[in-house]
Amino acid sequence: MSSNIPEDKDSLERFLFDENFSEEDITKRQWQIINAATKIFAEKGFEGARTSEIAKEADVAEGTIFRYYKTKKDILMGLVLPLIIKFFRPLILKSAEQIVQNEADKAIEEVLQSLFLDRLDLIENNLPLVKTVFIESSYHPELLNIVQNEIGAKIIPFISAFIEDNIKNDNFREIDPLVITRTLMSLLMGYIVFTNIFPETFKIESDEDEIKKIIDIFLHGAGNKNSRIEEA
Image (cartoon, rainbow, N blue to C red; front, side, top):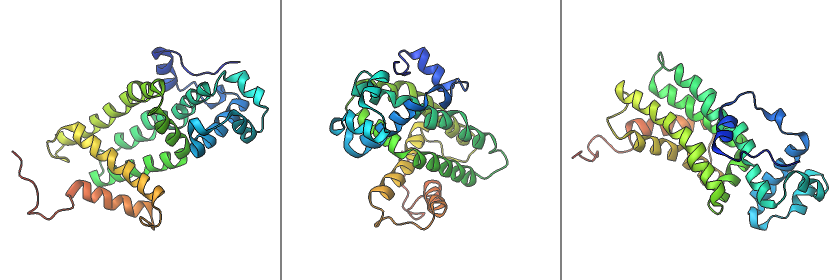
C-alpha cells in the first residue's frame, strides 16, 4: 500500500476543499506512523531521524512502514495530508470563515481577538506537525512548493480579502492590504515562537489577555500620538 500524498495540483485541491475526505480515509496504521514521524522529526529533524525510531514510536515493525512509504522522504511528504486535514482545511474552510461572516455586528477589536485566539488554538494543538513541515520545507523544495504555491496561496488571499473589506469599512487605514496581512501574521507567529522558545522571559498569565494587548497595539500603535511617521 502506498502513501495517499496527492501527486498533482488537482488532487491537492481535492484534499484541501473536499470535506468528504477525512481522517477516516487514512488507515489507523498510517496515523500511527504519521504521528510517530511527526514526533521524531520534530525532536531530531529529518536528517537525524531514523525509520527504526519512527517504527518504535509507532509500535510497528520497521517493515510495516515501508508497506506504506517507500523511503523516509515519502514519510515526510506524507505529513502534508494530516497538515491539510488537521490544520489548513480548518484554517481556510471552517472557524475563520464563520468568525469573519459574523463580524457585521461586532467591533473590529472583537473580531480580531476571536480570529487570533481561534488560530492560536489551532496552531498550538498541531504545533509539532506545523513546526516539522515548515522547518523541513526550508530544506526540501518539493515540500516548500506545496506550502508556498498550494497552501499559502489559499490562505493569504482569504486574509487579504478580510483586510480589504475592513479598509472599505474604515476599520483600517488605507495601506497596502498585503502589508497589513503580513503584519497580522507576524504578530501571531511571533507570539507563538517567543512564548514557546523563551517561556520564562515571555511568561504569560492568559492568552486571551495577551491577544487583547497585541490587537490594541496593532490597531492603535505603540507610540504616542506625536510619534507617527508622516506619510509621503
